[in-house]
Image (cartoon, rainbow, N blue to C red; front, side):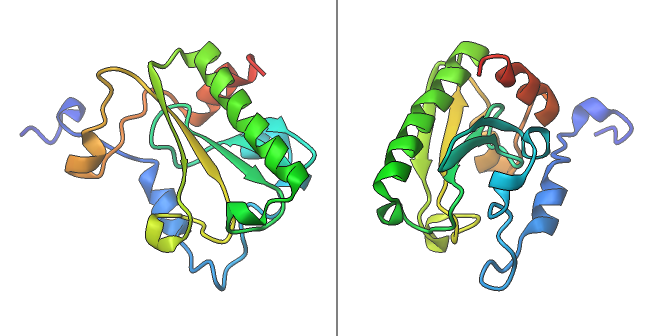
Length: 165
């Protein structure tokens, strides 16, 4: 292996901020709690509703990975009010539609990790993942080497998606 050849190494530069950001959520401030007050560009908002919002995930599994979450800090779907449930589901559908128009994926992974043992990175704040998938994408990379291959920056992806909102 030629260590001077950048094409012989895979890099996941986005991982270090994620590793450094890992917190004990029982003691640390919830990073989602102030979303309702923040700016569109600061959190890569695609949709801001009355009760919920859709944002681009800062630590994505794939290009275009979205999060749908209520503004209110709750840990489980059973805690959503009737109004929140309606808007939450509508935004999941709209987020998927935006990704379909903008990125034309072949499929989607849509779901929840409820609780720390289920893999929730921030278990104190409910969020739904919308992950676009393509035939032949790099889904073996996270399994084999804990590496994700993202062909575009978050800013670039957000700009493309925002045009379809």
